[in-house]
Length: 437
Image 1 (cartoon, one colour):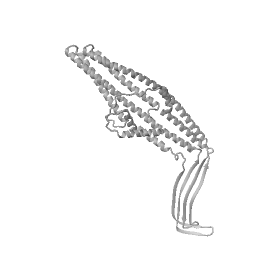
Image 2: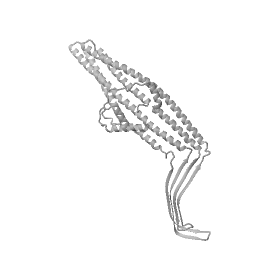
Image 3: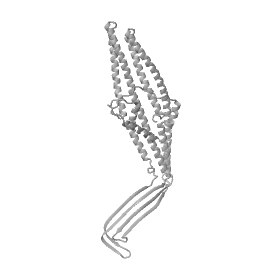
Image 4: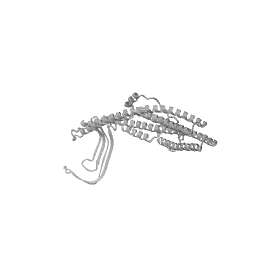
């Protein structure tokens, strides 16, 4: 069921990806994830490894099916033959030809091997599930990386937008200061300070644009696109929903991929114990063959010997003592199971801790985001008022600079708070196993 869901997801993404224009400039988070699931190298590698585990999960690989061989052999010889029989018959010939031909079908089938074949088949099924879970984990990790890279670009765009808005205020401030200087109401210091502040904002804007270009290149690499391809993203960072801690806590045991992977490892260890215990029991093999053989000689007691027919038989064996190797092997397999159990319990404890910490961080990030949204509105209103008062001469250059600095700081904090809340939400989705439906 898990494997079919993953393949349906990949097929759906592939179908949507085929219709995409390679030169598309605008890309949504959904489209970015689709491209990553279709093209990402780590996912493709994991998919191939999962397919290998599926191919290995067969009755034949578990030893349940018979082995059938077709063999043929032949020999031809020319010899000088000299034979003396007890009856007094003497054969002495040169250039004596002989031919031997054997061909047949040979079957070997293990009927009973201490139930090892059933244990092996069960182990192969669990290994196949491990491959599917590993693919799911890789998909989850890729979605987390793409989400982080995508919204990092959005955050940088928001910072750039704030810098542009602040730069526009600085340009207006410079014009006002220049007019006042021309009228002789202020000193040149106000004009110079306005120019310095404007240049500082322009410099910061250039640095942010450089960071934005690098972030877009990193996203292109995750999507396995040309890193130089021009792309653009949305301007907002939406949050999906509010989460309840009890729901998340209950979800991790049933859905967390890392915990499910650890559980499968425990089941593999259990089947390996059964495989090791099979050596305590006898083994029974069925043998059958259908053979044609022909031996022809120009001299000798038997001139022609030809056989055609089926032969049936069986072999039974039971290892009574092998230096306690089987006992030690079973003990080691049980220790492996105990190790797997301890690893699972440790991982469960760490995952529960991670959910608790992530949930608290998510709550803090949401609260901070709401606070910064309010602060940004206040800072914007304060900046507008300060600029108007500066026009009227009620505010000094220092006053307007302080208002600009507060506004820019609020934009930076708001963008960072939005990004942090989104990353916290994404981490909660991954831990609860709901990032991939």
